[in-house]
Length: 218
View (cartoon, one colour):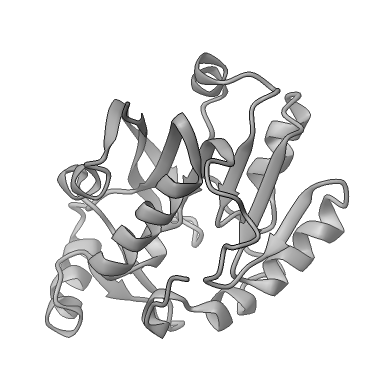
């Protein structure tokens, strides 16, 4: 069982956004098709309202589980996509067997976790859920260079003890990453590819994003 401070959980915050917030990080289907087939098992960790699960379902991938800490996000997903397997979870994943999945998606999840310890705990948990040779596909937001972002990184650096962590006006706490940090967190994995791309944040701001694919070594 993983325990983590409330700052790394923010369930009430995400419940408050569940009714109409839209997430947009794109999933590279060509990359997915190059590493797995529709028969493989996929976990969308932090699935929100099931957007990516539905996208993959439409492309023939039916063996998908989506999990999220926000009950209201999952409730929205069940209304939109009642055929999907979407579950609300806390920090106890005992209902999921080890070595259960061939691919884990981690899309715009790490950005919601400010502390190194909590990020590393999550990566370690995911590692235990992947089958031998299984893949982890991360899509998230990089450290930005715009004045707006640099100013808020500096504003909150002392409070959070890290450059790149900041609080929004609505109370949400977020983190942007450099690739060296991602490589450190996934040091037990074999790096496959890193791609940089332009994304939109959930508040519709343009941002530099990255997609990082790695797999269990051995």
